[in-house]
Structure formats: C-alpha cells, structure tokens
Length: 325
Image 1 (cartoon, rainbow, N blue to C red):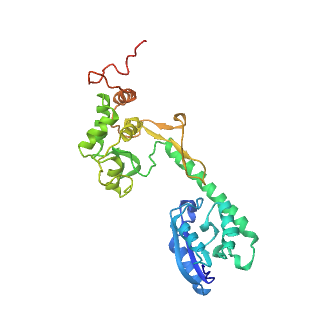
Image 2: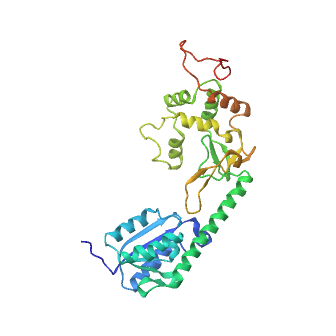
Image 3: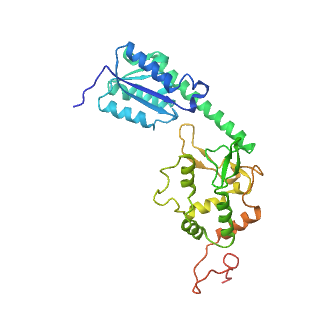
C-alpha cells in the first residue's frame, strides 16, 4: 500500500520559446531558486526537482512531467510547487484536468507561487481564468513565430537547424547557405550518376562501397546531433530513399524552398506535408551545386521504373518508348 507524504514537495520547472520575451524571468535558475526558497520558508521537504527545459507548455508529453506524475501515483509527492501556472502548462484543458481532477484525486496540494494559487486554501476563482490567458499567450506567440518564419521564407533566408547535405551555414550569416567542401562534390556526383542512368538503389550501393558517411552520420560527426538516427556499425549505409530525396531537392539548384510542411495546431506539433502549390520558392539565393539541365535530366531518369530483361543489360529506351500494344 502506497503511503502519501503530505509535507513532501516536488519542484517543477519548465522553460521554452513560448515564453517569448519573459524567458529571462522564467529561466530555470530563477524558477529553482524561487521554489527552493518558498519550500524552505514553509517547512516543506523537497524530495525531487523536475525540469523540462526547451519543451513547450502546449504539450504534456514532457519527460520530467511524466516522471513526476508517476511519482505522484506512487505516493511519493504531497505538494507540487511551480513558479506560476504557465510552468505547469499552456494547454487549458490539460491544466484543468491536472489541477481539478488528477491532483485532488491523489491528495496533492498544488501551489503556483507567482499567481498566489494554493489548492490547500480552497478553490481559487482566478485559476481557471489564468489558465485560459496562458493558453491564449501560447497561441499568440505561435502566430508571431509563424509570421516571422514566413517573412524570412519570402526573403529567401534559410531558417532550419541544419543545412541540407552538401551545404553549410555561412559563418557570417546563418540564414545563408554556402557549399560544404566535404560533401558538395558528393551531391554533384549523385546527380551525375542519376543522369548517367543509375537508379537511386545503385547510387546508394556505390556510395556505401566507398565508405562515404550518410547525411545523418555526417551531421552527427559535425554537430553532435542525430547520434541515435543511424546505425553506428554502418555509418556509410546509404539508402535509396535518401538518394531520391536529394535528387528531388530544388535547393541544390541554388533556390530556397520553404513552407513545405506545417503543424496541425499550436498544441499539436505533428507535421503535415503541404502541397507544392503552397511552397515558398525564392530563386538564386545561394550558390548552386548542380545546374538546371542536370537537375531536370536526373529527374527524368529517376522516375523511370526499369525492368530487367533477358539480355542482362539496361534498355536505353526505357521510359522513352512504350509498346503500342
């Protein structure tokens, strides 16, 4: 049988970009100091600290929050301390569930210091109103961020975290792409091999045999990211899907292509692919790795589905001629 420790407090801190210009006052260090001081002044025993740094309050799929919820269910926590309600979350429906149902059902006292909310002192009429305002703030910030990215896209500025394989960010301007001397040649080779008639599968086999690092493996080596997104035993294991994606990327012609996907909503970050007519394409924004002729020639060759024949060699007319019968 689990034993509820009513004087045992958990400190929960969260910070993300949806805090906008208020990020300094909401820094993890500031939150932790405030909560520790409050617990000390009120005689609470702090059993653990839970920190979700860089995760939006619109989602409740947060590692530390989920761990705290598990500890609550196990009876290890009697009090949850937050700097304010927005630290718990900016999703009104989920905040209402935890503050009005989950915490009371588990005999947990919820305290949001900055909002003067303490469920031990009874219902607080302002709590529901605060939660709605916090969600509206996240919605407004999301709109402003999307508008800013849209403007950058129209200006032909690169905004992704990492440059496409073959490029790197200009050290003097992170929104401008320049060729990566280590990989630009590989991209040019891929297009030339496709233009020469090699399928993505055969191109992948060539690069694998030569031991050339895949885009994910190369990014991991350069930026210490995506370490778990490739097979460490086979960092040069190229796939035909990777080759096909490179061959379809118009950015290798020197054009910036943005707005290819979006999210369902500011609460649901699942990506949705947009149709090509919704893309934002700005031409001649950076140095091309292939010219338009080679790019278009590669597209034609890649789209052709070649079939083996009894002669044991490729048919040079595949994709060009079709039997009338």
